[in-house]
Amino acid sequence: MCPLDECIMEYLSDERWGSPSPIQRETAMLASPRRVFERLEIPGEAGLVARLYEDGIIFEPAGEGQRYLYEELDAAKHLQRPDP
Image: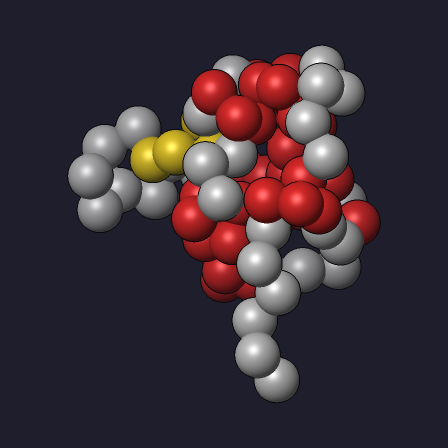
């Protein structure tokens, strides 16, 4: 996971759910809402975050994400790196 992923997970932990625009504003990272959305897709595929509604843009920590936030899970073992 990259620093932006960490900020996203911490935001979702604190707020319980969020969408890309508020996450981008509140994390103070130099990333566009589009980039935040792209980053949410990666932990989403690994079961760390889930969409509140099918095809929606609001996300919440999933079961594995809760384990990660409680430091019970090594996310690096669950996230697949995209091919260059």
